[in-house]
Image (cartoon, rainbow, N blue to C red; front, side):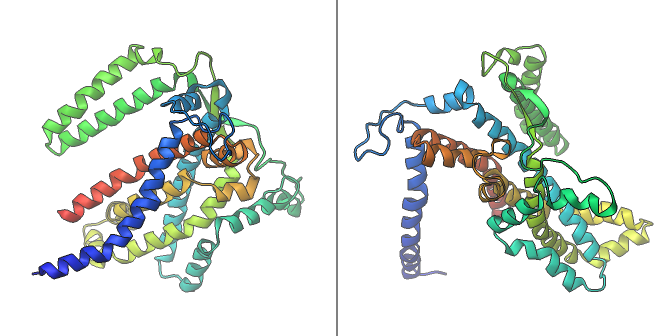
Length: 370
């Protein structure tokens, strides 16, 4: 049992770290959020004593509904598409490589090193390399000419084409539909686990939201008085390829460690029951890799949501087709001197990353206490 003296010493040891954390992390976060609620940047932003007024959530409203902030809305959409594609591609390629290496192939150590090597590079180096490879008149576009075919002409980082377009004006309708399906799925999952009280608490509101959206109630919620099309910029494909090349080795290492910790007795038991190698992989190994998958999604997701250096190195800050909110925040704050608007973009990124990370941390903490 710890003595009183040990407890006091433990508190004294961690107090400096807590003080620094409170000041340089949470203090600066609070300062940024407060700055986003002001008009700093409307006048002489860099004056010794700038005139700052509290304006509430006006900056946030202008970002989501203002006519002049169309780039922010497109950047937000690009960030979502980039995150989905990057995380999905990294997981799929990492799992594929881990499965191959787990077969005890010859030269396994060499292949592991090769696949992990990109992780040792910074995103700046990766972006520079792939910027050379994805030149419109060189790089991978000239590979078909090596076999007698005409060179490709895809504009990897400057294409203006979009796919999967939708109308930002009716985004609240999509948000309501998504929330309804999430609540209904949560209710069904709770009912399957015999948590009927939780199922009713989340399922009934979900059904109400779905009914409201289907009957057209949510369609009357419009962010803009005019239609505004946004979608997936095909120029981001090159950035996704570069990011996947760098991080797929990381997911490979995670999955390989998970595969090597699965007891062989489980595989043997499945084979004795008549399972084929594919069935063993599908019904024994993949379910046991689920915790690793969730951990990888959280780590890769937060990297993708705040991606900056890779895009900056590959396409520069002024290339709109590949822009993301972090790039726009940099330009708005340090080039345009619109400090309040830049702080608003930073606060929005913080909220988006928190939505991904906080539930995972809470779940992990509860599992640890259990």
